[in-house]
Length: 178
Image (cartoon, rainbow, N blue to C red; front, top):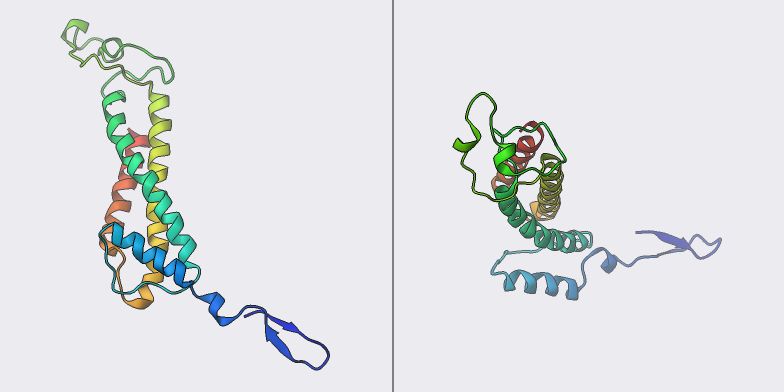
Protein backbone atom coordinates (compact mmCIF):
# COMPACT_ATOMS: atom_id res chain seq x y z
CA UNK A 1 0.00 0.00 0.00
CA UNK A 2 0.92 3.64 -0.32
CA UNK A 3 2.94 5.02 2.60
CA UNK A 4 3.35 8.47 4.07
CA UNK A 5 6.37 9.74 5.93
CA UNK A 6 5.92 11.24 9.39
CA UNK A 7 9.19 13.10 9.49
CA UNK A 8 12.92 12.68 9.22
CA UNK A 9 12.86 9.65 11.51
CA UNK A 10 11.90 7.46 8.56
CA UNK A 11 8.81 6.07 10.26
CA UNK A 12 6.13 5.38 7.71
CA UNK A 13 2.54 4.37 8.04
CA UNK A 14 0.24 3.03 5.34
CA UNK A 15 -2.12 5.50 3.69
CA UNK A 16 -4.50 2.65 2.90
CA UNK A 17 -5.15 -0.15 5.30
CA UNK A 18 -4.98 -3.73 4.09
CA UNK A 19 -8.76 -3.95 4.41
CA UNK A 20 -9.17 -1.29 1.68
CA UNK A 21 -7.85 -3.82 -0.85
CA UNK A 22 -10.78 -6.19 -0.35
CA UNK A 23 -14.49 -5.69 -0.83
CA UNK A 24 -16.56 -4.53 2.08
CA UNK A 25 -19.04 -6.94 3.63
CA UNK A 26 -21.85 -4.84 2.12
CA UNK A 27 -20.45 -5.22 -1.39
CA UNK A 28 -19.97 -8.97 -0.91
CA UNK A 29 -23.48 -9.27 0.51
CA UNK A 30 -25.00 -7.25 -2.33
CA UNK A 31 -23.19 -9.39 -4.89
CA UNK A 32 -24.27 -12.71 -3.40
CA UNK A 33 -27.84 -11.48 -2.80
CA UNK A 34 -28.15 -10.24 -6.38
CA UNK A 35 -26.84 -13.53 -7.71
CA UNK A 36 -29.21 -15.50 -5.45
CA UNK A 37 -32.16 -13.45 -6.71
CA UNK A 38 -31.16 -14.44 -10.26
CA UNK A 39 -31.06 -18.09 -9.20
CA UNK A 40 -27.31 -18.41 -9.59
CA UNK A 41 -25.01 -19.86 -6.97
CA UNK A 42 -21.25 -19.66 -7.12
CA UNK A 43 -19.23 -21.55 -4.51
CA UNK A 44 -16.88 -18.64 -3.83
CA UNK A 45 -16.86 -14.99 -4.84
CA UNK A 46 -13.75 -12.86 -5.38
CA UNK A 47 -12.73 -10.65 -2.48
CA UNK A 48 -10.61 -8.22 -4.53
CA UNK A 49 -11.81 -4.62 -4.38
CA UNK A 50 -11.47 -4.08 -8.18
CA UNK A 51 -13.94 -6.93 -8.82
CA UNK A 52 -16.89 -4.95 -7.44
CA UNK A 53 -16.98 -2.11 -10.04
CA UNK A 54 -16.48 -4.67 -12.81
CA UNK A 55 -19.45 -6.64 -11.49
CA UNK A 56 -21.62 -3.51 -11.26
CA UNK A 57 -20.74 -2.58 -14.86
CA UNK A 58 -21.39 -6.15 -15.96
CA UNK A 59 -24.87 -6.07 -14.39
CA UNK A 60 -25.66 -2.82 -16.21
CA UNK A 61 -24.53 -4.22 -19.53
CA UNK A 62 -26.52 -7.42 -19.01
CA UNK A 63 -29.61 -5.20 -18.83
CA UNK A 64 -28.64 -3.43 -22.07
CA UNK A 65 -27.62 -6.77 -23.62
CA UNK A 66 -31.11 -8.18 -23.13
CA UNK A 67 -32.65 -5.20 -24.91
CA UNK A 68 -30.02 -5.38 -27.67
CA UNK A 69 -30.83 -9.04 -28.38
CA UNK A 70 -34.54 -8.18 -28.46
CA UNK A 71 -33.76 -5.27 -30.78
CA UNK A 72 -31.82 -7.55 -33.13
CA UNK A 73 -34.79 -9.90 -33.28
CA UNK A 74 -37.21 -7.06 -34.07
CA UNK A 75 -34.81 -5.53 -36.60
CA UNK A 76 -34.81 -8.81 -38.54
CA UNK A 77 -38.42 -8.11 -39.54
CA UNK A 78 -37.71 -4.59 -40.81
CA UNK A 79 -34.30 -4.77 -42.46
CA UNK A 80 -34.00 -5.00 -46.21
CA UNK A 81 -33.43 -8.57 -47.43
CA UNK A 82 -30.01 -9.21 -48.98
CA UNK A 83 -31.42 -10.07 -52.38
CA UNK A 84 -33.17 -6.71 -52.73
CA UNK A 85 -31.73 -3.88 -54.82
CA UNK A 86 -29.65 -1.80 -52.46
CA UNK A 87 -28.86 1.03 -54.87
CA UNK A 88 -29.99 3.62 -52.35
CA UNK A 89 -28.76 3.45 -48.77
CA UNK A 90 -30.73 6.25 -47.16
CA UNK A 91 -34.08 6.56 -48.95
CA UNK A 92 -37.31 4.93 -47.87
CA UNK A 93 -38.94 2.89 -50.61
CA UNK A 94 -41.73 0.38 -50.50
CA UNK A 95 -40.56 -3.18 -50.12
CA UNK A 96 -42.30 -4.03 -53.38
CA UNK A 97 -40.27 -1.42 -55.29
CA UNK A 98 -36.99 -2.03 -53.50
CA UNK A 99 -37.13 -5.81 -53.89
CA UNK A 100 -38.15 -6.07 -57.53
CA UNK A 101 -35.29 -7.66 -59.45
CA UNK A 102 -34.98 -6.07 -62.88
CA UNK A 103 -34.87 -8.46 -65.85
CA UNK A 104 -35.68 -11.36 -63.55
CA UNK A 105 -39.12 -11.27 -62.00
CA UNK A 106 -41.84 -8.78 -62.78
CA UNK A 107 -43.08 -6.63 -59.93
CA UNK A 108 -46.35 -8.53 -59.71
CA UNK A 109 -44.46 -11.77 -58.98
CA UNK A 110 -42.50 -10.37 -56.05
CA UNK A 111 -44.37 -11.26 -52.89
CA UNK A 112 -43.46 -9.22 -49.86
CA UNK A 113 -45.16 -9.13 -46.48
CA UNK A 114 -46.10 -5.48 -46.81
CA UNK A 115 -44.02 -4.64 -43.73
CA UNK A 116 -42.08 -1.43 -44.38
CA UNK A 117 -38.35 -2.03 -44.67
CA UNK A 118 -35.71 0.29 -43.31
CA UNK A 119 -33.12 1.86 -45.61
CA UNK A 120 -29.87 -0.10 -45.65
CA UNK A 121 -27.89 2.72 -43.98
CA UNK A 122 -30.30 2.92 -41.05
CA UNK A 123 -30.28 -0.86 -40.65
CA UNK A 124 -26.48 -1.01 -40.63
CA UNK A 125 -26.19 1.75 -38.02
CA UNK A 126 -28.84 0.28 -35.71
CA UNK A 127 -27.51 -3.26 -36.03
CA UNK A 128 -23.92 -2.13 -35.40
CA UNK A 129 -24.98 -0.30 -32.25
CA UNK A 130 -26.89 -3.31 -30.98
CA UNK A 131 -23.95 -5.62 -31.61
CA UNK A 132 -21.67 -3.13 -29.81
CA UNK A 133 -23.85 -3.53 -26.69
CA UNK A 134 -23.65 -7.30 -27.01
CA UNK A 135 -19.85 -7.14 -27.27
CA UNK A 136 -19.57 -4.79 -24.28
CA UNK A 137 -21.48 -7.26 -22.12
CA UNK A 138 -19.19 -10.07 -23.25
CA UNK A 139 -16.07 -7.98 -22.57
CA UNK A 140 -17.20 -7.27 -19.01
CA UNK A 141 -18.06 -10.94 -18.60
CA UNK A 142 -14.50 -11.88 -19.60
CA UNK A 143 -13.07 -9.26 -17.22
CA UNK A 144 -15.24 -10.64 -14.43
CA UNK A 145 -14.14 -14.19 -15.21
CA UNK A 146 -10.50 -13.17 -14.57
CA UNK A 147 -11.35 -12.49 -10.92
CA UNK A 148 -12.80 -16.00 -10.57
CA UNK A 149 -9.85 -17.77 -12.21
CA UNK A 150 -7.57 -17.70 -9.09
CA UNK A 151 -10.45 -19.22 -7.11
CA UNK A 152 -10.68 -22.06 -9.66
CA UNK A 153 -14.38 -21.26 -10.08
CA UNK A 154 -16.14 -20.51 -13.35
CA UNK A 155 -18.61 -17.66 -13.12
CA UNK A 156 -19.67 -18.72 -16.58
CA UNK A 157 -17.93 -21.48 -18.53
CA UNK A 158 -15.26 -20.00 -20.85
CA UNK A 159 -16.54 -22.11 -23.75
CA UNK A 160 -19.92 -20.34 -23.55
CA UNK A 161 -18.29 -16.91 -23.53
CA UNK A 162 -16.11 -17.80 -26.54
CA UNK A 163 -19.13 -19.18 -28.39
CA UNK A 164 -21.07 -15.96 -27.71
CA UNK A 165 -18.11 -13.90 -28.94
CA UNK A 166 -17.88 -15.99 -32.09
CA UNK A 167 -21.60 -15.52 -32.77
CA UNK A 168 -21.39 -11.75 -32.14
CA UNK A 169 -18.44 -11.40 -34.54
CA UNK A 170 -20.32 -13.53 -37.07
CA UNK A 171 -23.26 -11.10 -36.73
CA UNK A 172 -20.94 -8.13 -37.22
CA UNK A 173 -19.46 -9.78 -40.31
CA UNK A 174 -23.00 -10.15 -41.63
CA UNK A 175 -23.57 -6.42 -41.06
CA UNK A 176 -20.45 -5.26 -42.84
CA UNK A 177 -20.15 -7.84 -45.62
CA UNK A 178 -23.87 -8.48 -46.20
